[in-house]
Image 1 (cartoon, helix red, strand yellow):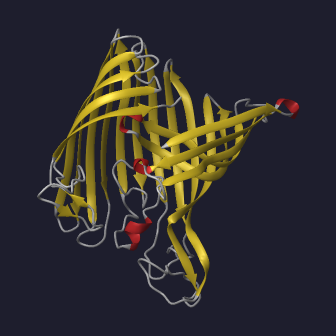
Image 2: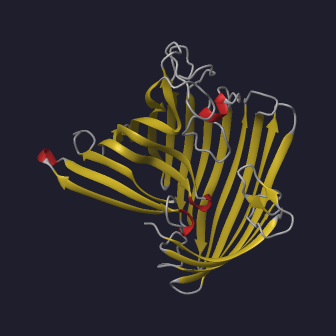
Image 3: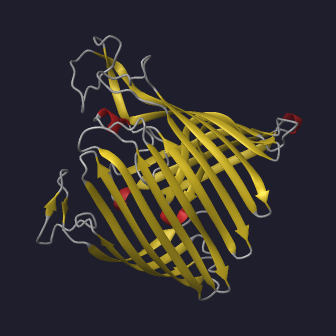
Length: 395
């Protein structure tokens, strides 16, 4: 994946500042040509600043954008991700802090359906889960409205406290049913989060408590930004599901030694459905990344990680997946003493272990093979060693 962000701003009448921001993304899965190559415009939005005399930082915006995304970089996971077409005002002065609010209209192209003429105003999917005749009058998609509000303030010197909430409203008919034939009711989704950034002499640390409720509380390591349409239409009712997520991540540095860490825990319940549907789940992850600076542009880095995830089903059965990872790398970067310095060139060796014996690596040449439902062949092995080189660049 490669992204290039370009923007421009200029001064307007009455000291206003106008801007346009864009982001182009290019994806080429596994370096192959053909359909795997994709080029698309991820962001395109306009901004207007300095329009309110009482709040010089307040910015009005309209367009398609990533909006105040929150990321745990070590896990490469965005734990708050609200994005699509929308509008809002951000960073408006209110009391001791800054207020932001936004509205988005998000279309889910993965769950498109076609209208049928003879179902009393309902609609029915033509292909896939539902069958119908040829009386179709056009195609549409599921739409989710998102309303986001955020307030941040300095809680003490070196600390920033942020409070945020998002309401997700799926497209339904007058009876709260999705506009498909014979489908269950859909409830709204909710996200609430409290986060505290703490900066001190040796480094920084972020602590997060997040609560997700409704059909957007589907999976561990989720950000709650999407409605679980597919699960609901298959009889897995998550309208009353609720999930707690706890995160703590950051870094510290003492001389030429540095240390970064990430801790994550989640627990969820309230799922309903068939006997084989999920009833609850929980997951835990812990990663540490110590490093030692060799020269101004080079360092030795290690990474040790562990995760476990357990799912309990309505029939009382449960399953557990867990894995461990150990990496040793020689790293080149512009400032080797800063673990966030980029671009970064890595030459690494990684050991992986998992109790999911058919999930690690595709190996059709080995003897004991497992053929998945999609025809992919995997070898039943629970460990793997990988050597490689990697480029990471962002700023």
